[in-house]
Length: 233
Image (cartoon, rainbow, N blue to C red; front, side, top):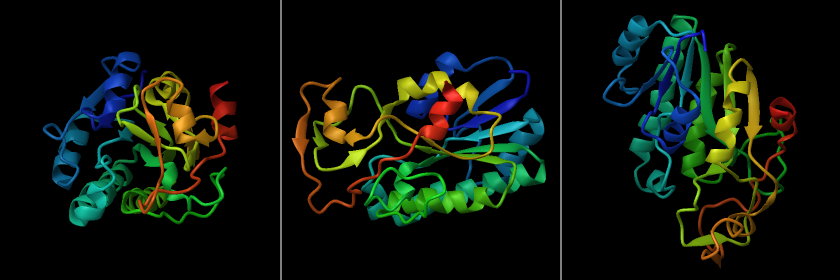
């Protein structure tokens, strides 16, 4: 890449895999030690030093989902306020911003959601990511990726058999990432629609089917990925 790119969240699972495919002297990965998203001066100092043309904002609080219910303040700080700080600096220095969001921002009842469909999260994790989206949406020079991805191999012993999704493994998304960088707007990123259990058992044979029960997990959070497939093909 000729353009300088600053990436937050270098210790995330996505970044760990991205580094193997997406690297070079103009691509700078930063961890919390290098750039604290809760300190706007920290962000600005790094931006002034590196002078990036693009910021890819991956840093934030994700798993386990329960932490967003138990520690609302941390969720707000890392996923909403931190993202707002990134947006402010991106606007100030006219930097293209790419934000990692989630398919869980949709209501999660009917499935096959398009990028233009209304959003209405069912859990605090998704609300926190949508809170970040609100700031990013105000900035025209941006791209929001609503990701439906998981680690490979699947890290849990059980997978929901009564929850429909459009999961794709991080390993399968990373090779296509370069094709998304110069785009703007919103793009759903994921795989084929299926129950989470049916998706996972293809690669992880010892996983057990479990039910959602009273968990705050959407019944059908599957997404329409026609836009994404057209881009990567």
